Length: 196
Image (tube, rainbow, N blue to C red):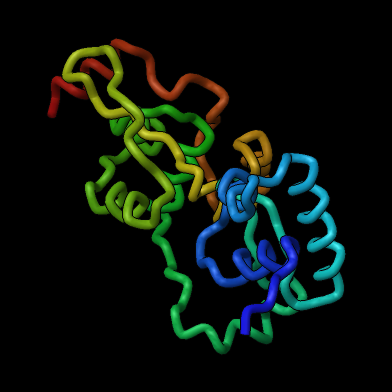
């Protein structure tokens, strides 16, 4: 028995069954012909309204649209989550904050700000989590890698872009030097890379 499914129900099902966020292009392509931007916006707004009083909400992030547990429901549902949220060391969190607020940065830049060497494990942990990536090399001696945050980082923090990051003063116990200054000047970066 073949039943037709409304476009709204089809998009809702796609969003509920996918573990990753879906972008507008993917959602529009679920129909033939693809939905216009206005049609898709209308459907997504209707779904947001429909799900307002529930434990799930439809949210938009840098990666696209997805359903997620609301803040009000999360504490009670957290005990069901068999996959525990990993706890990150201070070194990992400081390194991530430096990359997020100063990007693009090199390893030497991070070390100059933190005042200590950056372990390869720290960068690997952030890469494995999908929060940072290499976006190129600095045009200086040794051509060090430039690190930046990913769309996955923004999505996990429910941000659409970096301008929505909170001020550094709101990061609580994560105390970093003044990041409004350039991370490190060019001559210092070259000296650090020569020491390696």
